[in-house]
Length: 269
Ligand SMILES: [Zn+2]
Image (cartoon, protein in one colour):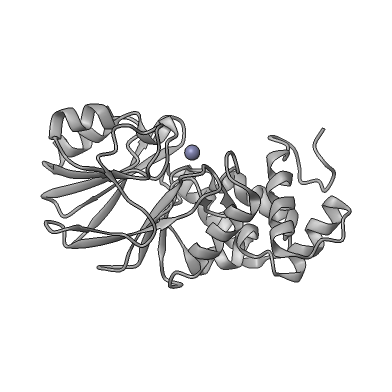
């Protein structure tokens, strides 16, 4: 049986550790000490590292982990991640024989140019999507284009509906606050907010999330939905209806969304 465990680092990052109680694979180790403690506590042997993109909160722990374990590091080709030993690209399979898992590489540029994700189909459907999709939200578009990010979201939305999505930041409640401004009458969203508030009160992660749920609550996955389109048009005062335009309006709206205030359709100052 494969367990997937979140190791919390920094303010709101999760490093995901897959393990079968003997061997472990770690995704996006932005720090090493918390991973090492988790491995020691559970008596696990680390066999590989997977990296989604070059940001330091996803890569800073690699050096110490490979010094201790001498293991392969899979990741995209990027000068900014020199410690990646095995460069991977779209469609490539990574087989972990000891864990009996095959990862499929999905290129998903937008947050960064080289960003990739890793999907699995067995023993369950899952995807490690780095900073591309967050529950009820979306990563910032730092290096790529809105078209690229939207295409990356489309790629994720074509995975099976029961796919568990292992996002790397605990941004869910903040994202829900934004989503409620766009889609205030969405009952599934309101119920999800109560559930997530309860989980956070108990200091539990709201993740992983599931694709079927995200398709009903995540505005960035619903750029064809008439309610989302109407909200985007109202905010931008533009007659946009192309899904990429809607996506880019939502992303820019979120970039400027007030940190602490009630919902408002007025642009942030
Ligand atoms: Zn990032």
